[in-house]
Amino acid sequence: MTPAESKLNLPTVMSNTPKRGRGRPKGSTSFISIKVADLINNLGPNAKVPVGKKWLEDIGFEIDDSPAPALAPAPVMTISSTTDEPNPEELIQFEIH
Image (cartoon, rainbow, N blue to C red; front, top):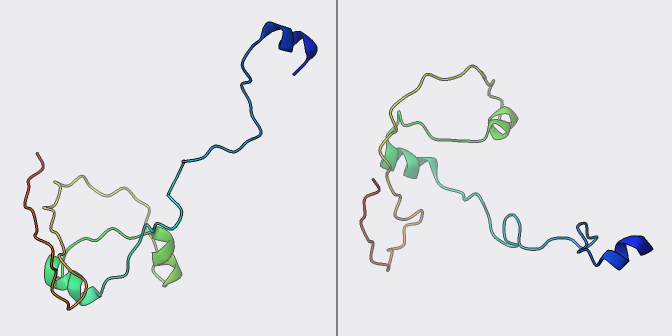
């Protein structure tokens, strides 16, 4: 800040200190592992499941980037557990409109 700017008592716009609290919190994860059998049992063998393009390319799929035709949204299903252990929580049913 120049001496002339400091006399005007203007707030500092740019700061060298990094901003905190942006992005994903430390320690959280965006992905989980789930058995393909659990997906098939809950969604069916013809369900469309969103996956990352990079992951598909890494496992050997070729990506066609042409735009897909617009489709009606698919019904949302919840997977209650990815393990064989019983879930002690009570599930709450709700609808989103």
